[in-house]
Image (cartoon, rainbow, N blue to C red; front, side, top):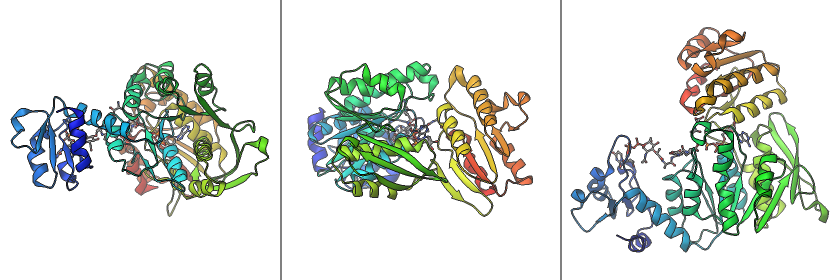
Length: 436
Ligand SMILES: CC(=O)N[C@H]1[C@@H](OP(=O)(O)OP(=O)(O)OC[C@H]2O[C@@H](n3ccc(=O)[nH]c3=O)[C@H](O)[C@@H]2O)O[C@H](CO)[C@@H](O)[C@@H]1O[C@H](C)C(=O)N[C@@H](C)C(=O)N[C@H](CCC(=O)N[C@@H](CCC[C@@H](N)C(=O)O)C(=O)O)C(=O)O
Ligand SMILES: Nc1ncnc2c1ncn2[C@@H]1O[C@H](COP(=O)(O)OP(=O)(O)OP(=O)(O)O)[C@@H](O)[C@H]1O
Ligand SMILES: C[C@@H](N)C(=O)N[C@H](C)C(=O)O
């Protein structure tokens, strides 16, 4: 079936399901294949449990006209999303970067939704499946969409841009994340730069952090229709500075200094000086879309991080900075620097291995141990094989596994401290929480 026909069906049934355990009534079920299951086998069940149609790619399962047979279900999903996107005549803000995508996306959404009907990527649905699902969930009447794009290899952002067709774009930063798939730091720059390439070719608008030399250079070498700069310097369209970080950030910002615009102060629910850039990006985008300072401040101050991203948790015995949703050398470094900046009687670092670093893994883990030793801390606990490899060269505490750390913390608990808990998701550092 060609995409136009599928689109006509989608107009009648504008909801998509991919899991028979969560079928939306009257939706179109896309039978994807995964590591465990071939969802063609669930297509009939999807119809029985409320789906209107099932898109499949194996003829053997096509037993009535409610089955839509295509060559490849994933491609059909992506093509439908691209086709639907083209019908939406709205600004689409594409967002990528090594760190801070989800936080910045949530902040932008929180700000823009003070004035517009917005739709933003849910959670982290940012890949070749997540972006199409996000686009197809945009309801008619939406005025601005904010689409997060993730990648761990070259050409992935180009592919996602081709589907989402952003009119505006932001790269949060270029860091040392997913080095394995991108082929090193230069590869990350190239891969994330595919968003800038798309916006250059399509005469879009980019928002650029002027304090970030890499991003500034990437913007400088391209010819954009419009570049909107933000940063600490008052010559930027939006400028700002941190007023407090104790541990929540309070910031001051100003738009168009030249026009003698007033300064604004906003108390945020975010910790970590690195979040300053994320916040300023959202303010800049709010200003670009002509929100008032009150609307912008309201959007920023209301946003409360969730899901273990820089989340402050007060337990009976400690103040925890829970940051174990992910970890890479860049985000580890800024999280350690933030521990140095905050005021606390006792500071403890619990750091877990960083994944997907390939040949850079050993050196990057060693570097993080050194960085952690450059700041004042009462205890430094490193967990995982990547860190453990270097245990003989340092006097800190090392465990090969999270289970081993669990047993040790059970007998010698950490108390009365501000504790940074950060590591890759696969380290499952959340299992330590009950002891902290
Ligand atoms: C296809 C699918 O949805 N997969 C999810 C599934 O994985 P699995 O391979 O185990 O699939 P199954 O074999 O179990 O099932 C196949 C399909 O059958 C359906 N089904 C199954 C049983 C049943 O009874 N009924 C059924 O209908 C089932 O629903 C499947 O459709 O389960 C996993 C665990 O829950 C999911 O993780 C998996 O999701 C995959 C990975 C996915 O891509 N989901 C996207 C919606 C998404 O956006 N996920 C994001 C993660 C994004 C991410 O990691 N981003 C990276 C960068 C991008 C890297 C990129 N190259 C990549 O490959 O992802 C980043 O750094 O930000 C998320 O969930 O957060
Ligand atoms: N601007 C930033 N610079 C460096 N590190 C950051 C920045 N913003 C957030 N981080 C770090 O990255 C962690 C994850 O944040 P967030 O989920 O927003 O990033 P992400 O890029 O969306 O990651 P993912 O795609 O894996 O969800 C934070 O908890 C924090 O440690
Ligand atoms: C969760 C996934 N998107 C990711 O960021 N993985 C890295 C390697 C991590 O978990 O730290």
